[in-house]
Image (tube, rainbow, N blue to C red; front, side, top):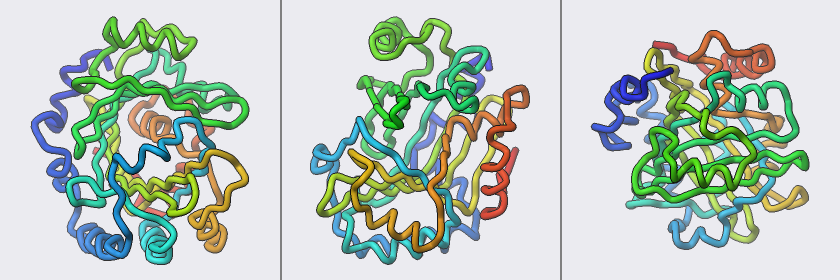
Length: 287
């Protein structure tokens, strides 16, 4: 992808509010499911962004789970006393839009699929409901911890500016002048905060990937991530996953989206994960 302006015009993402964009992609079959989920989430006590400052968990241990949407509904129905739910502008569903950057030869993507112990992702993320924008770097360490660093931005970053490049040089050991935009990713997120422990759980729905040429939608699945400050914490959400015999698994939205949108990247390492997603969902819908 060489022309970011062409990509930006794809589906006119900057001309629509976050919720309107997501609502425009909901099929008739999805609407009852979302309505039912909203009813379940009303049982949770709310928490605000300001109240979540104590559980930012920018240096953490992650556990990820991919499961069918209906199983996620059942899980959430059982956990309302264990967690509070983030509410922004009165809504438990928060909308995100992300632009991922990589080198021309997909160095970050290859770090991940080749199983390197130390790997990075660079993204510009819009928190659409709270109108916040950040340039973010995620660093997976050889000790299996995730460290996230972020730079507040006045507006979404569409290319690596001088200011962004200087910051990136301080937080990651890569040739940042080569970074270019690769894919857009959008999703709806539900965020839970443990009422007793330092734990967050994020649940991503309506996941979509797109670039100048294609769009791929993951329907019927939920991707959950449990975020803890250490390995040995009790987690009610992890307990539910064990009871349902759903294992923790690696899942990178950037890598999955890149493999779906680009033909020339290495895909063998993602084959089993893609087959699992196809099995539990309707499969990616490509346009």
